[in-house]
Length: 540
Image (cartoon, rainbow, N blue to C red):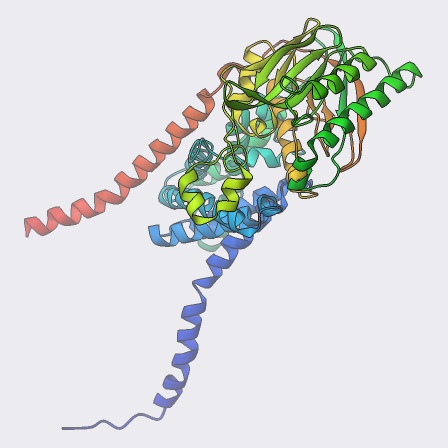
């Protein structure tokens, strides 16, 4: 057997191999790191920060890491993007119950983003791919808003755009169209940069590709500017003076539920202060007063002492009060808004329809009891769902009601307007989440809803931030957090419907169909070479 002696330069090649192997191992990490960081960048674009424009480079970077990827890499990169975005965005869900539920929620929700990543990678080689990719993202949001457990739409791209140039598009087609425009512009930004770089390198770029890239950026911006004509705070049905009362809670956290009477007393006390200010001429007399969700966790229908406190507050201010209460009826428990008249007492009610899983009811109760019985103790009885839209007629003014969590759901706000609401109120209780960003995220949702339906939106909250929002999405008054206070303001009433209100779910369905068409095209295009190879093999 002949043995060949190593050449002189062979040791150098041998020494070089570890470096090249290490570089090959590190190279795949770059897209993973970029994907996760882009997710974090998207989180930073959300309230309470006003850096809405950061969503554009976030999606540009996401498009860069996904374009042309195989399915395994796309799933992984999408999941990392979802983790980077949702881990910090939803950290408030673990404020009082620990990191377990927070991490579990994020782990599940990031799966939807991973599937979106797979879809974006699949359509990324199609002509005008940013359009298909943005529609895929909206489809992911549509699914996430419906499953599991009736959905969790928190973190919709639209909810990060309350201060942005794209906000008027909410009046065109609601949160799906607003979110689509932002994502399209972000992907289009990457495509424009890519096409420009390719053109400099090869000096040959198809005019159609370049035009599609530029239009992906220009059309959303132009559409948003054109949609500004739909945004107005002009009164159509006169005006009404409203008062929003924030009573505060004895202390933040879940423990405040053990002091339910104190919470009720705080709101009654702040209402009496409002009455004193009215008498002193410091503020105008409101036409009605809005209390937050859970202002009376003591059922006033079953507890005469609670009813007396509310009745005395209504008599002191001399106008009806919308009271957020917990009510037991026919063996069921409801999160209920009660319109309490100073003369007639309770006259109208609205039962919350979109109740919060793991907060107001426990899915899989028997399984959770076996895993951790403290969760089942915390939610000892499930709340029941209401069945009718909430619209109170208060002296001729029709007030739509979307209680707290419901503000995140398109249908729960829209159908108050289609049932005649001239303004919207979003009574909430955020005390459980302490001073986290949750209250600011929810406030941004209400700002988007104001523009979406061209209605004034009031946000009475137990511990803050309570606010009054004009139909153009601007906050005119707000409170601090964990302080008592009241806001009084004359607001416009409106009855016209925006395109978004009239169209309802149709824009979202149209974008889902666009996504389906793009995915079908991409799958067909990928299958054709394989079929051709198979035909050639058989021919041989």
